[in-house]
Length: 464
Image (cartoon, rainbow, N blue to C red; front, side, top):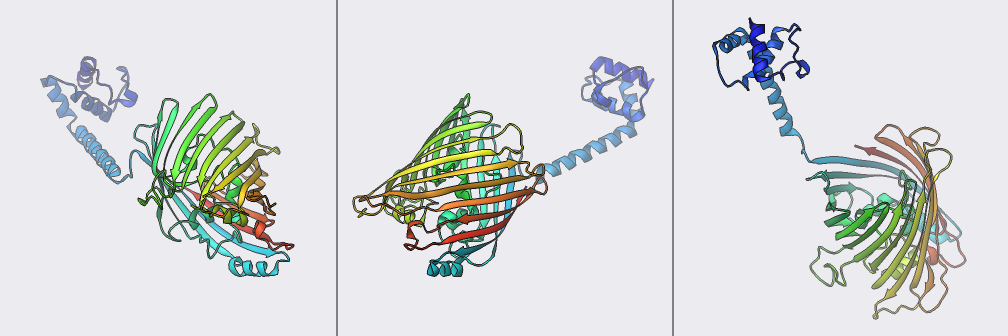
């Protein structure tokens, strides 16, 4: 009778959700719990309480009580998980990095060699950690908050040595911060699409966050940041501050425009603000095309000097950029990568040229008027073992090629790096590397003297 009564209910109300797989076959035997699950599913749909229904509920009273207890228990566990989870719209990703590094200095400029050994000669062990909180409210937009900390200190334990062109990527990230071992907001910006356009606005956003195309596929693991900037550290100066930008992308073509004020949070127009003389501003326009295996990009940046916006250059060129004025930086970059990994590497190359003018209050005789830069990076994916990578790059940070007044500069510094990344697990990589600077001081090297730097490091990255 119970079987027939349930069949009648199912036929009348169509309540089969409680049966395994949501299907009900009248010719198949069922357990008492399956029958109770069917009855429980029908109770939400029944509009008329009959004697037959009351009898069914009495018959399966114990099974219904057990099912109800199980459901209540599951609901309680779900509620507990929801109460403790971080957010339904926010994802956390992190990168922690350990770097063990040391330098060796050589050359016949004995005083310079000894001074750098005394300042940068020790072996150091440093760390860097980044926490990215990515929030989406519509599924297409992005609110990014990045927390960052580390203990790299450009004044005391750099393994980059005599010139900023030799500093590591991690070193540069923190030499401008409040101090080592302090947690700070590294990024905070909002990005959203509108048709073929993507808009970005942030109180702390980087120039590179607002470019549709990054002009290089090198490297898989950064050693010296100067060799990752498409050969044009002026055009790709990674200015960080208050900013806004927009890019358009369609059928492989892309155009980007953005503005960043490094001192945009300062209300004094002499020392900060937006679009003021003290803004520390960078305005950037980029146009490029990317296909499946290659890309070609041209970028122009207008830079306000005397705001430490040039992160990499020879020391001689840095001295000129410390004077008030402006620099127009142009970069042309391209990359190509094979369809399949093998003995043929990907190639990333670029060239940059910068034209600098100074304020009328500055005596510009002998200062840098034109500087250039370039780099070439090669990378072999799945080198020797699947998942590992091998890389090599060579280039020059911005170096003087002409001076105000017509004098010929004697500047320049070749930078090399070699590295091999062991992908220990999906989330852990160990990268031993060597880097070499042929002339870290550039034009400030004593005349007729040589001064070189050779550095080594082991970098361990943890992604989570």
